[in-house]
Image 1 (spheres, rainbow, N blue to C red):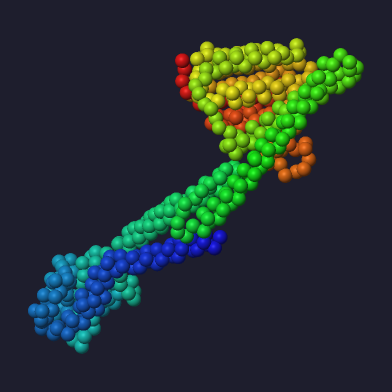
Image 2 (tube, rainbow, N blue to C red):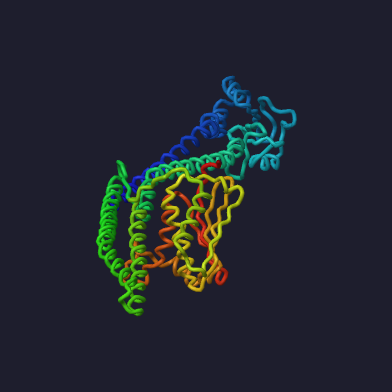
Length: 456
């Protein structure tokens, strides 16, 4: 986990550095945007500087030519008033600006404007120097002045920079997220695969290589455990087969012996039937184990499902089933020609397990229906009966309790439902879906759905 912490820390440091760079860029853009305005308002052409320059070049008789030229370059008009408010001289005075003022007029315009022109005043020994700026150049308060151009540009700057910052942060988040997901997705996928009990092999370099190595190590351990479990089950199945065959043989001979009493023959017949059931359970156990760990090869070929169902039903009836059970086949017209690439031996085994399951749970008899349906994209094999069905409690129990592969409890009652599990594993091995649709007292229904290959 140390490498994962370093990996996350690296991205956090990178994100912090990105924010600092973004702040620096904001400052640069601010400087570029307002540099000219600031230099004009507080540099050589600022009102304060222009007042000082003009006052130094002004006399009651005239203003120097250089000062006049400097005023005109900045679109500034000027008027020089004596102590009585009369004009010594003026430069480019607008027509609507008077040339004489009372004391009250001076008191008013010295704080702000003359006819909407922002004005700035400078008191000299000879009188009062007044500089007037264009109407849209400055806004004045009692003790300060601000550039109207700056005030107009400031909201646009704030909104623009805020939007740009948000966009940059989002892009940084988006691309960082994509990269993190890209780097961690193989590990997440591998962990999910491990959770399904399947082996994985990761080839990752860089900061996450240590985590990948740990996942590969866990996969190797899990794979060895799975192989050991599957081999143990296979070995036990093989070892049971010989003594079980002997028991079945002796029980069969005793059941058919004319010298044995009726009770002994009846008991021998029970032993023979139970031995057959044990043999089938062992075979199912071994097959589920092989399917679970993908050790069972699938011999797939193109199979016409309607023909396979009829063949299975005929074979089942020929082996003989109690009269309390009846079996029917229903094939829709569009499913009659459905072709599926599958292992027909395993698929018949799944169907048989579901049929036997219906018989087992309905000792008083039932009608079993084999249904073949097809749509444009998939084909479904349905095994349904009109028996007692499963109670909601039993169905929930079947769904939640682990089967023999997953159970860690020593109680044998946790290790059940092998027939349904085998059918599910066979369907899963063919890339299909297995669903149970049950309503109490109205029977049991299992559906195996597969992607359709073609129609003949």
